[in-house]
Every structure is written in structure tokens, then in C-alpha cells.
Image (cartoon, rainbow, N blue to C red; front, side, top):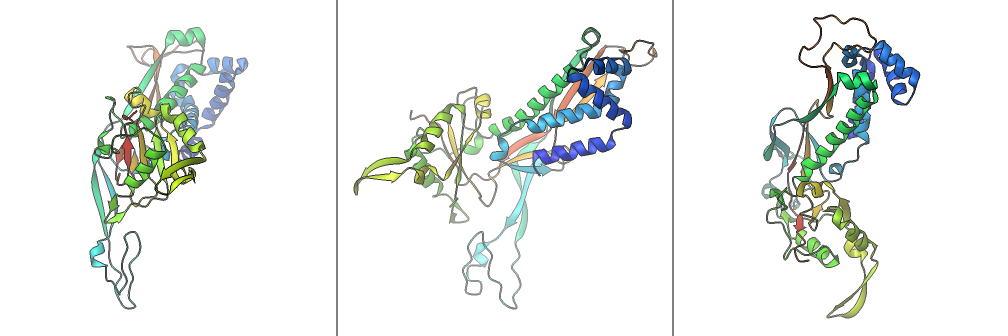
Length: 373
């Protein structure tokens, strides 16, 4: 299920659970934040800050989830979304077939990734369903909170600042998803991350047509269960600095080549067409631009996913919460002296998100640091 589908389901549930008063408050809130002065005054007069968590919580959650869904991300072009039930080591389960027992099955050779022949009265061969513990755990939550003081609320009457909080937090949550995956490619020290150990191309060439040919040839030497990797297409993942280089390479139509056959023209698309470029700006952020020349090639449609973007069941989307001191009133009047916090006069907004990324199988993947430049 896509991020947008998760968000749409969450919004539908919020709308179903909202009370009549909460729906009325939502209409006032959206009108007030759209510049309707009358709605703004009605909201100030009718809702004390002690009601904000109760009355406006559904509204703020709707706003937050809509903004989160609208945030562009790159990880979903590279990794496969995966759910775990709880904190702890991430396990990936899949089927395993032992081809050695099937090589002469009913006179037909078995090829990995296909189905073995089953004789007329023979049993269907059984495959094993195994769970592999990956080299990473989902063991932390991430979040931040912002405080809105009593003074600012009294001076400004500015409910739109709550929207500003939700906009910023939605952006932070979406960016964290990309950062989690980018950490599987590069490090803050400006090097390739651990999953890429030993996968760099000979001499670390710059990104050009020749190095793309080398990447294809090297990738196809890799084997899974003795079968060479023969992907029909490849992801070409790079940072922002190589965007124009990639665009130029894809725009080349013909190149001239000289070899033992003489001088002749070839179609450059033969080299570039297997590659689907993916600009991944999070690489720039993680390494602070130190890996600008790095580029990565990942086979597509392989038996096992290259990367997983891991979320927790029931917590797929980030959660936004609101807390207030419970003793501020915009409408005037008395507030019971025993209500609210004694220590502070503020409203606090908080976002929480649980997301990690992990490499599963990089067979056939290669990269270059571009150091030959």
C-alpha cells in the first residue's frame, strides 16, 4: 500500500471518529487560517486553549497527514516498503529452493526462479520458507516538539502558527524517510556505506558512456545461486551534482567508435536505455556534498529486494500530538484554579515517526566514487 493510500485511510478514520463540535471547529479553523477575520474572532471567542487538544486535534491531524502525503520523497523509487510488528532485529522472510535436488526432475532441467516439472503422480517438491535476520534493527523513534507561549497566543491570536508547525513537521517526517535510506549509500564521513563494501568499479571511473558499459558488464558477472544477474533495467542513483551529467548522457543519440572493425557509428541508446536515473538529494545532505561524484547502479526486478524501507505496523504514518497547559482562555472568564500545569504557560506540538532502512541483497549492484576525475 502506498503512502498516499495509508494517509487516505487514516484521514477517513479521523473523519469517522470526529464529533459534531470537532467538525464545526474544523470549519472555523480552516476559514480562520484562510484569512476570514470573522471566523478567526469566533474561534478566539469560542475555544479556550484548554479545548485545543480535544476540539482541534482531528483538524490538525487531517492537515498534517495531507501535508505529509504531499511531500515528495525518493526512497520509494529505490527501496521496497516493509512492515515489522515490533522493535528489534529486522527479519526478511522469503522462499528458498535447493536446485541440486531438481536438476534431473522428470528429465527436465530446473532453472532458478522458475517452476520444476511435476510428474503425473509425483509429489510437488516443497520449498523452504525461511526468515533471515538482517544486519540492522528497528530500535528507535524520532521526533521533535515546538512550544507556543501564552504570550504569543494572547498577542497574536494567531491560529495559523499551528498550521506552520504541522507543515514543518510533515516535511521533517518525509525527509527522514529519505535520510534513512541515504544512510545505506553514503556516510557523513564522505564514504560509501557498509553495504557497498567491495562493490566499487575498477579505477572508480567518472560517469560517462564507457563507465556505464563497464557497470553493465560487471553487474552481469554477478551470480545468484549460480545464475548470472540478467536484469532488464537498472537504477542509476546519484546526487544533485551529477544531474546535468546524467541528462547529457541520456540526450546523446550517436557515438563514433573505433576498434578492430574500423570506425563506425553506434546508437548511444543501446548503452543508456537500460538505466533509469534517480536523483537522490538526500545523499548530498548525509555526506555534506563530499560524495558529489559518487554514482550507484542497482539491478531492477531481482528475486530479492535490494533495500527495504522499514515501518512499524500500526505506525506507518507519523503521529502528531498536541498538549497544552490547560489554563489559558481566549474568551476571557475564569478558569478553575486547579486545572492545568503549574510550571508553564504554553501549547506544545510534537511529531513522532518510526522508520529505518536496510540493505537486503546487493548482488549485481556496483558503484563508483568518481575518483578518476
